[in-house]
Image (cartoon, rainbow, N blue to C red):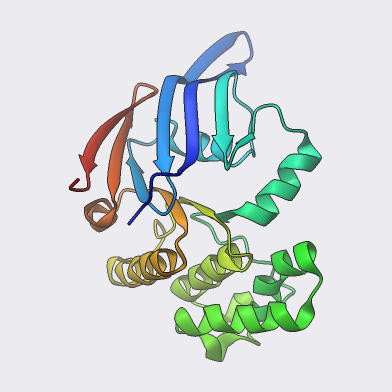
Length: 233
């Protein structure tokens, strides 16, 4: 259950991409308010700008116009160094493709963001193992990613995203490459962990069960958001 603190505030957001001599407007006049501790789902067709929106909120990309305020930080005016430090401390990313480093073990992959931020090996290991336990793959801690199933790899990616105890988690089709049964299980665990820690989760998805369990759902169409489903007041 969310509180009344605004975690993410997007105002009059516009994103235009240039391709050769032509311009493609992906998002225009978009507004979004996400409350701390809430789970917000965004659905829309392929190419509707869902991933672009997450990248803008996370400071991976910059808007053409408009403002994005995350935890009182104006993302559109921050420097690359400031954005990098801010992301590592306050934002956790979960992508459709896990992007694990193949030369490192599961626990090493998970510990890496924590070590960059805090340099505390013992604490990083303890937190990593706690997350692996909650994700039910603690027995895979010394395994290399190429020995994992798709579902196991995505659980590792979730643990890596949560290791720094981020206030905001941005998930881009986190179960999009998994079979339905595995996707349902991982989504259930992710929601349970996010709610127990009080994280704010913004998830782009096509999974109907995610939509059903989110506090608020928006559809993204023609560059604008429409609220589809809200929790009972």
